[in-house]
Amino acid sequence: MILDWLADSYLWTKSLHVISVIAWMAGLFYLPRLFVHHTEQTTPGTEMDGVFQMMERKLLKLIMNPSMIATWLFGLALVLTPGIVDWGSVWPYTKGAGVVAMTWFHMWLAARRKDFIAGDFRLTGRTYRIMNELPTVLMILIVFSVILRF
Ligand code: HEM
Image (tube, rainbow, N blue to C red; front, side):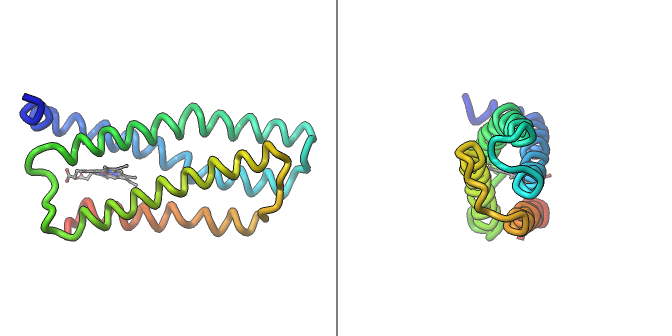
């Protein structure tokens, strides 16, 4: 039965979860940095604008979207694995809040990529630098939740 199978493959699932997380986080840290330079170093319609758009599209479509989906799938498989999540503890809720916020941030970045495509360079490099701190804060919350298991 499926729950036995999930229990048997627990360490495999967890390894694949962490691998997916690393790939996703790499993009979540790097895409806002690309936006900083995109908005500060280029203007709409230039050749450099096109190069940044290409880099941002590839990072989002080839790395971040697939790794976010994989993180969720393996994470939810861990949630279903018998004996892993103690719903009486606090950590599943702080972790859950962290991953929902991280997913919101991913969607926010995807929407900002569309702004650049539309020639909308309204947000400043400073805004992107500040937003770049959010995944760091959320990562700390998530890792403390899942490792300290308070
Ligand atoms: C997207 C939805 C996610 C779900 C549903 C989820 C769920 C889970 C669950 C249930 C575990 C197993 C806990 C255990 O075995 O002790 C786990 C492990 C882990 N998660 Fe996630 N997670 C998600 C996203 C993330 C993210 C975004 C990060 C990092 C920023 C992360 C980092 C980790 C780490 C490092 C572990 C291994 C902890 C250990 O060694 O026991 N997860 N996750």
